[in-house]
Length: 106
Image (cartoon, rainbow, N blue to C red):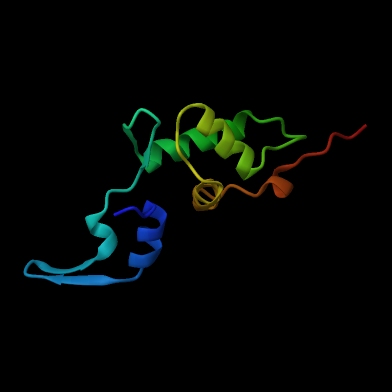
């Protein structure tokens, strides 16, 4: 169709389809996940685990921004937008960069 999957997701959000089998939310018909450069699918749960691991291993004095995390994942061949990293991070209850920063007492 020539449109990005995020556009389709935003367009179908909150919409329903009546079928002979019942009423379904449109997102039911789409499989969640991301694609790697190789074309293989990566589940959203495994991507969330990758994001969590990156954040757990980051320098707490200089936490990574969502854009930097997206760039790290892209370097591993995963096509992901900064917005998606933010959505997954917030969904896991992980704070934003400024709130994760820790200061060493001298």
